[in-house]
Length: 141
Image (cartoon, rainbow, N blue to C red; front, side, top):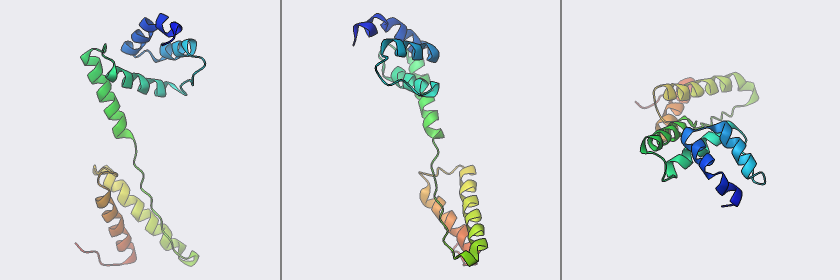
């Protein structure tokens, strides 16, 4: 750790414990101007929560709060579902309808609480069922 960082250790600790993002950004810029600077407050806040979970000096209540905050953030990360429909140009309307119904099946799955990543096989089954319905193909129950 640099001498400059050691001189400011108490302020780093205060910022971390109080989640003072603005002061932490200014302090980081002052102490380590040669290092990459965070792109936004959100990046700083996430880093601070990660540090609070690992720091031995963090009170247990603050550590639990940071764990919870990080877990919530992890759950909010969206999974992506790709839907591709290939039809000849002369059947573009059919392609649009297929895409729409398949997309709606994904949105409904999400609204019903399915995890688009963990429940991917079920989401895929629902997409294919929607596709079959539009194409008039009998789908096994």
